[in-house]
Image (cartoon, rainbow, N blue to C red; front, side, top):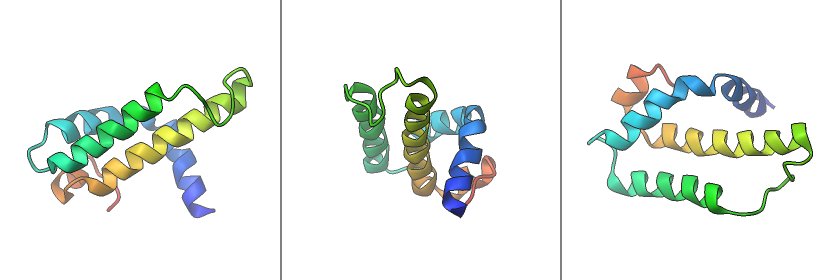
Amino acid sequence: MTRFLRRMKFVFTFWKSLPFIGEFFLSKEVETKKKVMSLALILGYALFPFDLIPDFLVLFGIIDDTVIIAFIIERMIKWAPDSLKEKYRLEK
């Protein structure tokens, strides 16, 4: 339950993650393998033609998209070096 609440909090503060995402891909401290894996997750989600919940179910369709995006960014935060986490005050 706590993980769900953290993810929902993240969904509402997603815009704060954009500078972190940019620096994650530009940082020399992040392994290339982790950058490629993150990019593969993002592109795989963007190019996958099916949703878990169709978007025509307005509220529910958007929720599944935001949960998946939150999951991908959560992985990126775990893979980020401590210096990047500290700079953006992210959880370790």
